[in-house]
Length: 204
Image (cartoon, rainbow, N blue to C red; front, side):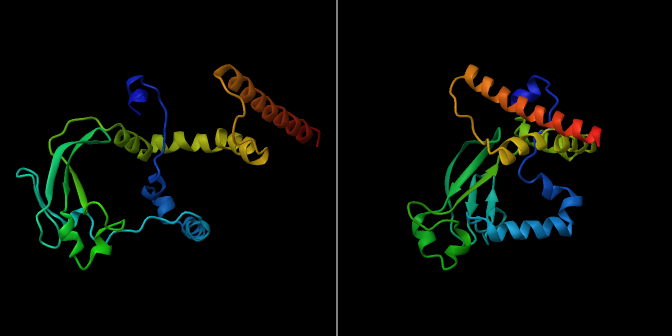
């Protein structure tokens, strides 16, 4: 993302949540039905949602102090943690406090082993540019949506035909020159098929 913005390359790269932010998809019954079907048929289990999210913790950024929902003070680990070009404070619960917590399953996403619950929060006043947030704002805009819509009927069908219909989901050669040659042959095959279909349609 940083490279694209620094080189001023006009492109739209959607994140995994961009559909959920679009009211047209968020309120669509067809989309919700398809999403429910995928949840039932997916092999990997979705992550369990925590009952106690980070907003349930009492935090004082200036004092670098954090208290868990069970009333225990958490260990301060520093403010040098970088996530998406932003600096974060991180706190960790003492293992003995988490072991004695009756609602441990609602607070921990994984079984309690080496350490207790961890919580991170952004440092106020950070001016670091988050290029992922810039791309989110771009794809949320009307111009970004129009630009991404072009991809859906120009680029996506090409990859769908090559990977799904032709079962070419990976390149078997190694090296930039050989891979480029193999991919070029795949594109030629796709274009010949399009020409063949177009000629048949014109004749009809």
